[in-house]
Structure formats: structure tokens, C-alpha cells
Image (cartoon, rainbow, N blue to C red; front, side, top):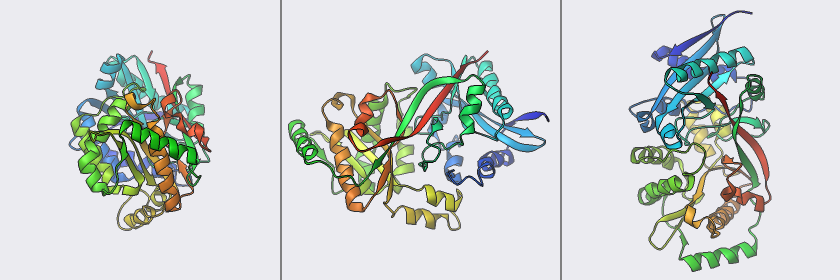
Length: 375
């Protein structure tokens, strides 16, 4: 068999090849959801992505017979290693042909770079932060993947296990009929909770107004709610602003639910969007010349919903507050004619997020972060 060549990517021309690779790899795969190329470029732009102030990265591509066969990004998140007292190099943006040798060569390149920088473990798929895609699909390959999540074919985890990579954590994604009725008992209990703790659901504001008034507070809640979860690094002020500007312009106010206390602080929230997966397949990652038309149509189609972010401040997690925004969102989905929703990945050990077990739901997708000691 011919030799596999690994090349570090830096030049603009090579970076375009890195971005283009999955489009070639998955051109016949109807389940793959192309990312927006503009978003991918922004993620790797040190002038635009504040996470790169505390993350180092290297991009590698694999070639066989001069033809691109795989890609990977090695990431050292210095804040994460400091907070969690670890010496880990992450791998992400990991795609490869069905060839275990190519998979190994890419991972070995990241491990070697990590070792040069004092790392003793390699873990992934993960991004620069928890706002990036993470977790390799190991179940649910027939489920339409939300645009904010990794998609990969079934041979990926097979290759990882052949290379003796082990499970570090799993995330699960629930699929929920969005039009199931909210029980009267839930309504009554939620009203009691709101009255008892002087809580209210924010209403009457546009998405832009919510971003201005509550955007930073929402990410403060995320920092508190996610603080103890696997690998989480608190978002700084630059990152909060970055994500507010990146996401809020696309949000529909009816798909944002904020629960605030009597001090107008966000104690719980849920953020969702219409599924953009099919629209992204049609526009093939490009907004122009006509990609924006597909996306605009999709933003007005509420049949399938992606639940992007949700959280409750720790001090409120045992007071039933999560039920308020889930039920509120449920009512809105019914009004919008929604049929099915898929939740964002949650750690299987995160019992505070297990509200979906109380609904008609099923675990549709399971994702895994793999880990291995660097020899």
C-alpha cells in the first residue's frame, strides 16, 4: 500500500483545501450537514475569535498518492488545562476516508505535536470551546444531525476503537415530539413555582432587544450552569460578545425563552431554532449567490426544531425552574405547528438536564469523546 503523507497546513491555498475536504468526502452522503464556510473561516481567524487568545492550534492534512485523504486540528486550550489540572491536546475538525491507517496518521501527528508541548493525553473530537462542535457520533447515524453538531459516518468510531482509543465521556441527544400537549398539572405547578419565587418569563421583546438587555446575562448563566461539566472553560467578556453577535441575529423571539427573577437576572433559559440542516445541504456551505434564499426559507419553517442551548443556574436547579421554560417552549412549538425537536448534546451523567425523560422522547444520537495516553 502506498505511503501516507502528513502535511501541516498554514498557507491560504492549503487552508482552502482543508475547508473543502469534507465537501469532497461527503459529496454522496445525504446525512452530512455542510457548515457555513464563512463561519469556519471566522473560527480560525485570530482577529475575530477570542478563544484563540488562549488556545494554540495546528492543522494537518493526510495525503495518499498525492490525493487528500483526511484532515485534523490539534488544539491546546491552556485555560482548560489550567482549570482542570490536565495536560491534554484536543483534536477536532477530524475527517478521513475509510482507512484506519489514515486515521492513525492524523491522530499521531496531533499527539506528537502535543507531546512536544508537554501534553500527556489526547482527547476529542472537541473544539476550542464548548460552543464549538464536540463528540463523535457512535449511534444515530440515520437521524438528521443538527447543524451545530458533528456528523460522521459509522466507520469513524470503528477506527478509533481499533487504535485503542477509549471512552472519556458520552453525550446524548433526545428527540422529542414538539407538539405533545403540556399536562394541566405541569401548568399548575409552574404557576406555583413562578409565584413562590417571584419569577417571570420575558415577553414583549424582539430578539435584538433580548440580546441587548439579556445577552450577557444569558452567558453568565451558562458559565454558572456549565461550570462543573466536562472540560468547560468560562466564557470571558470578549467571547460573550462574539457569540451574541454570531447567534442572536438569526434567532426568532418566539424560540427564545428567558426566565428572570425579581432582580431581572436570567435564572434559566432555552434557545432554539428551526432546523437548517436541509437548507445547508442545498446551499453547500455558501451564502452566495443563492444560499441565503434557502436559509431564509428554513428560518420560517418551524416543522423541525433544533434545541441549541438551555441551562439553569445551579442554585435554582432543584426548584423545578427548568419545567417553566420547557413547558413554555412546548406551548410555542404547538402554536407554530412544529412536529419534532431534537435536543442539544448533554452529558449522559448530567442528571440536572434529564427533563426529557419526563416527556414522550427517545435517545436519538449518542456521541463520544475518546482519549488516549500519549506514549
